[in-house]
Image (cartoon, rainbow, N blue to C red; front, side):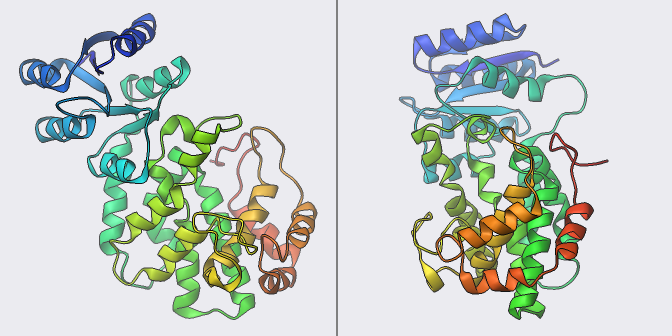
Length: 349
């Protein structure tokens, strides 16, 4: 029976810290200073190991290589990567190597215990690998148009959206409102479907952002904010494998650009920002104001309209804002009711 956690880090103090935290919380831990020793242990005792926590930057063999070796023999073993260094290539290597989760150092006791408990608690648990399976399945089949876009992506959005970074209802609301705006702007057919699909997938890149940065309830540090700002580029990279998906990918890449050039990742301005991203920015602004957040209650639709008017011409395209202003409150409120959530942000059952 699997019950032991393997801790792998070349720094003695880090191994001691991880061991103390997890042991104090009732876990049976065994630590190694290098990946080679850990692999030798796994060769003889792999059936006893419930989870691995490994650093990335280590001599001889790094954590990504160690992950790859483990996956060859124990493909379903939960594997948590830790690193004080983070960039997009590293994130993509971790994602492609099927890391179960990625935590950014220094990791707090609360974050470490929560990450481990997610995979070792009794009963059914969500495994992030399920999200990756669904992403790959979608990437393999998404090139063809047609059908109910939201319904076709529902399994993917349900796993990524409600479990990882945003609620499924948020993704559905911003997509439906973006579709309304797009219709007012004159989009129809395939271009309108591309807008809706890109909106549904806008935050897919957050699948590769460290979990404790995604879940942090308070203000992000400068370094954590740098990591968070990578998610549009990561999402675009994931979707680059899909043929004939340029419009959707462009929305994912550019959904945090601003009309005056102050956005990211490329500081695009005006009509250099793809049309679908400019449309989406309004629906996202609306939903951000009208949704509950840990630090404030949801605002009213009237307040959201006022803010959208205020940032028209700076953050938002004024021509598209005029199209948005032509939409009745009742149409927006209907979407909000259809994809509503409870006061604590959980989806209604």
